[in-house]
Image (cartoon, rainbow, N blue to C red):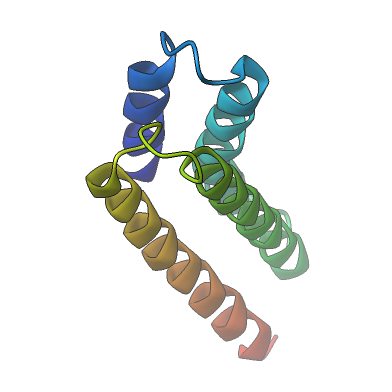
Length: 109
């Protein structure tokens, strides 16, 4: 869901003359890499590797939040509805990642 929101937001903004292309590219890269890192964690070689990959996904999520904040700091770039939807999705994914990492750390070997 989040990757779809990121793609549609970037697609909608790509023709805007007000947006720095590099910021849009960074949003797209960070936002879509979260899912890729979670997928990679699925095939981790150990619990430690699994946790590490999920922590990378969490960092990419933090970067996504940064770019959403930066792009929405200027009125009219990301509308309020899209921004709210993106921020809610980021909050949900962050909560899930943190919960999985926390429970993975407490599981006995």
